[in-house]
Image (cartoon, rainbow, N blue to C red; front, side):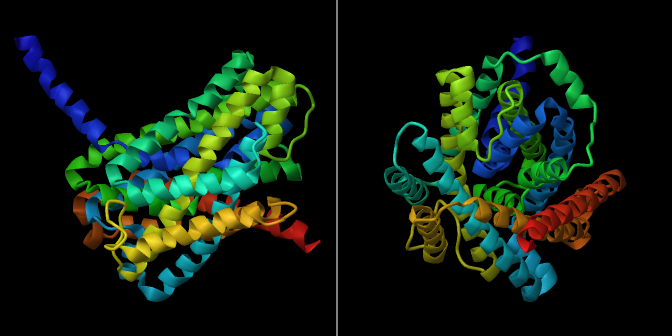
Amino acid sequence: MRRAHRFRPLAARLALLLSVIGPGIITANVDNDAGGITTYSIAGAHFGYGILWIMPLVAVALIVVQEMSARLGVVTGKGLADLTRERFGVRVTTIVLGVLLLANLANTVSEFAGVAASLEIFGVSKFVSVPAAAVLVWLLIVRGNYRTVERVFLVASALYLCYVAAGFLERPDWGVIGRALVTPTFALDRDYLVILVTIVGTTIAPWMQFYQQSSIVDKGLKPSDYAYERVDVVLGSLFAVFVAVFITISCAATLHAGGVRIQTAKDAALALRSLAGPFSGALFGIGLLNASLFSAAILPLSTAYVVCEAFGWESGVSHRIREAPVFFGIFTAFIVMGAGIVLLPVRSLVQLMIASQTLNGVLLPLILVVMLFLVNDRSVMGDRYVNGRVLNALSIVIVVALSGLTALLVATSILPAAR
């Protein structure tokens, strides 16, 4: 009896954790989208295991940034767009909103391009796969409620284990990988710098802060849930980077070893199929499809949250269309535009993907500075939940480092175009 009584609080805490968990895991993992998978695939194929040292640092930065976002949502019960408007006014909010809309539309197009590319590996035309994916994503959000949508998203997060399986199938040298993860290497090479910066930029994106905070508000989490939501953020961030590491390992063990150069995640899947066997290629292709569908739902949803919060309109997945017509209208418009552009006779969507990364780079420093101001404002957070000195120092270092890296990303994206 005593033993049962002793374990009862633990069981209760575990049940509470499971009820809270979701926003952190979903937000971190959805950023392993078509663009992210392409980035990690190119990193592994072109630079091998030597690029892995950046991953632990990215994990720390991701945890710190997403934890601040979660804390803002739990404590205030408001989304980031709402808090930005209240604290900084309409002008700053409008600027942020304009850049975010452009970046999110470009990102949404790249996700539907990922759907097309992943199913073309299995012989399915984009004129079949993209409309079907658009309808599926639309029905999930419009017809579902928050609990149903979150469960589907959590299952989608678990399917990223396809990349872990693909990594093990290549039988890499784990001793070499272990040393690469803790041994920084650096090369004054333009391509190396670009991929290094892009890894950071694709792992920590501006839309993530908006979506996670809005999701926390939509779920109804309170300050009493903060400790559990922090666990959610840490687990989600670590799992997302864990998957990114295995995507890199898969391509490093086969493509880099074979001297294969790629430009897209589809190239990686096809090359893996020819070098490592059909099962590895199929796993990689399934992972790309899952990631693209997942992100094609989240990015329009994040955009709808942001716009509605900024202007005070009703929002939330659990509402019906008649209760939140603007929210679902924006979501639908982004789905239609994102899928429609992919179906146009466009020769290459690579430039659009580069443009979306550039816009993310422009916006990220501004969003991080806004978050730092908000999370240190005692009138917003109270005395208990503001940043402490150590966390503030770490946050400032991360903001400065990310700002410098994203400035470099923007420069390397613009300069080639200017030529």
